[in-house]
Image 1 (spheres, rainbow, N blue to C red):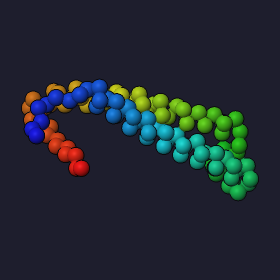
Image 2 (image 1 turned 45 degrees about the horizontal axis):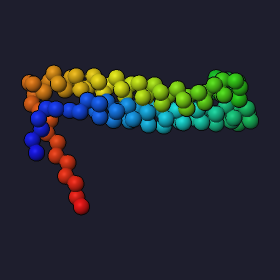
Image 3 (image 1 turned 30 degrees about the horizontal axis):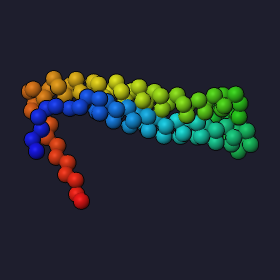
Length: 108
């Protein structure tokens, strides 16, 4: 199957948006739970509050869990914007560089 230079823009942008959402969720989990563990260790005096530059468990620890909502939303928006930018760039450069050829065959 030969590529014809046509990309389903909505499908491409949705794919990038979902990928950004998933990455944002992963990073949000790492950020919020990682910060909570560090703050708990400082509170238990296992780590030095001076070295870690944190007072331990505090209101800031609670706010860090906002990353579980904020980072996926940021990833979603970034994926949406990148999807649109990539489609526009593809449409511009495919005229000079040739069309993209992808062949997906279903087995079974």
